Length: 69
Picture 1: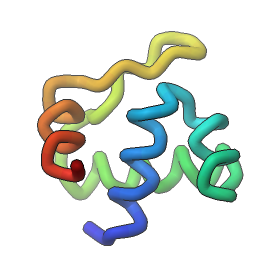
Picture 2: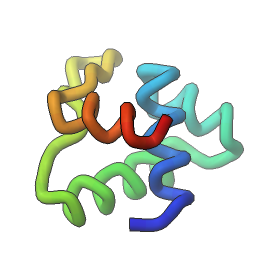
Picture 3: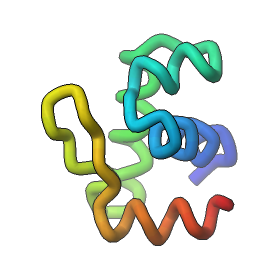
Picture 4: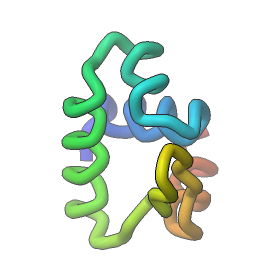
């Protein structure tokens, strides 16, 4: 797990959108999606419930966001 991955995760969690998080931190939406998938793979847990255009944190995502803050 790298610091940049946690920065991407925090941006997505706060923006509740992969594309808005990308705009916020200057990365493309596919790069944001890849970073989140990589982080989820490393942790072995999904961090977001992807519901159409809305992304809601899972329980694991909530715990990680608390630690990031």
